[in-house]
Image (cartoon, rainbow, N blue to C red; front, side, top):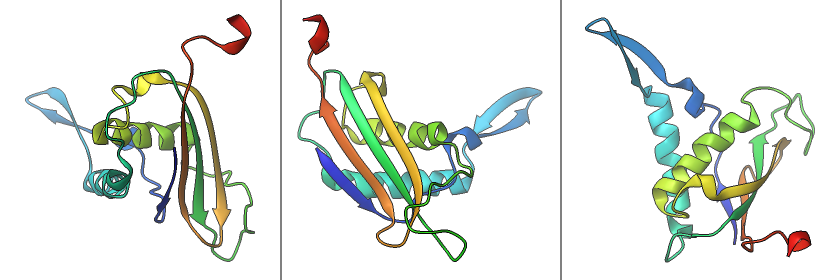
Length: 138
């Protein structure tokens, strides 16, 4: 399955949860910007939701294309924050919530890139179901 989410990718990540003390105990919460980013991702993902959640091992390939502005070239690597692992965490959490798979632990092979781009900006996602055994071990 190949999909492209046409949007300016969020730069806030799941790692940016906040902590407050409530009755002298830590209480974790999501800041409003994080809630909005999750909502936008979920809205863009819903039209691509499979009829049934995937149940086997999954390979996930993602390319994050950020608007380049004047200081960068088209397809230049984005070597600044946010980190790819933090971007992926929020995306996979949203894909789990929408129902692409049962649990994002099913993602056993992953490739991620982040770059600056002219147009279109967005998130290119390719999902492949893998066989139960690696080919070279069968």
